[in-house]
Image 1 (cartoon, rainbow, N blue to C red):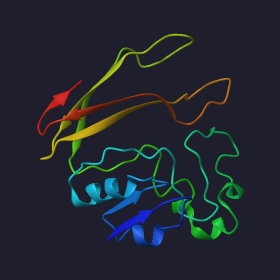
Image 2: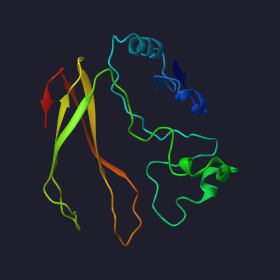
Image 3: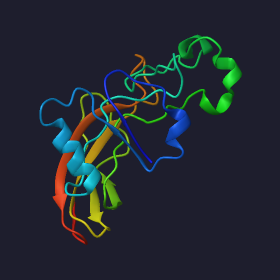
Length: 175
């Protein structure tokens, strides 16, 4: 089963577990139907990433750029009746910011950081080896996030700082 959704979020949790994929096509425009048909038929290998988190329940709102504070996981953040839905859903979304599927498989290995701590106005160099381990060519977007574990000022829990997108033929790798 394939679920296609568009416009504002619809609660689709009940059908997602029985589906192989979900395509979000919010306001796809004149060429949107053709683009979606090419993805479904396998003519085009999708490489897009979600630019938002997707809720499991009505009122289950948590933007990816939220601050980590004592109010972060209050029941009031998740809508009326949330406490009856169980702890499994308290801090999870149906999909997370940056998720996306492809008709191939990418493997990440050999993460190298120039330092383990970023302080003040310092900089950090990071590299990772990405390999297309599948049988189809595809593009992969490598997303680089920062997290401030200890700080005087509350920072977002996860902050996208950089991304790179590159096309890989089957079996090929790059750093």
